[in-house]
Amino acid sequence: GMTLVAVLLNGLVSVVGIAGGYFFNVLLQGGTPGAYLASFSALAQLPDLWIGEIKAAIFGLLAGVIAAYKGLHPKGGPKGVGEAVNQSVVITFLVLFFVNLILTLVYLQIIPAKGT
Image (tube, rainbow, N blue to C red; front, side, top):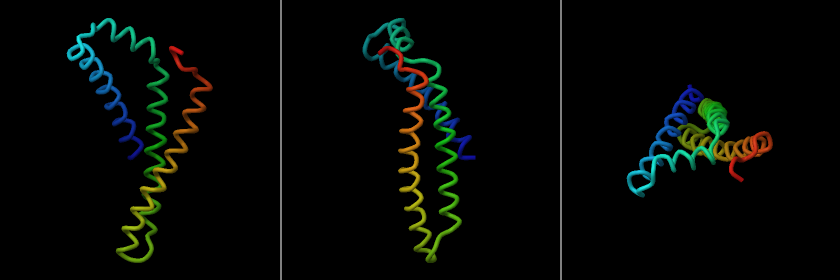
C-alpha cells in the first residue's frame, strides 16, 4: 500500500512542480512559454521521471516494512510504542538517505546528466 501511495504521490508532485514552474516563469516572471519549454527540455529527460518513480516505489516499500516491523514489535508497554515510532522514523530516514545516495550514483553512471 505504501509503495502505491508513494508512486502516485510522487507522480502528482512531479506534475504540480512542472506546472507550477511553468506558471511562475510565464505569469510572474514574464517569460515566454517557448523559452520555458526549451530550457526544460534542455535540462530534463524522461529517465529522470522514471528514476523518480522507481525511487518513490523503493522508498515506500522500505518505509512500510520498517514501520510495520517496528510497530508490530514494540517493547515496554505504551511507552515502548512511542519509542518504536521514534525509532521507526529515525531508522527510515537513515535508510532512505543511503538508499537515495546509492540509487542516484548508479543512475548517474548509467544515464549521464543532460545539459552538462
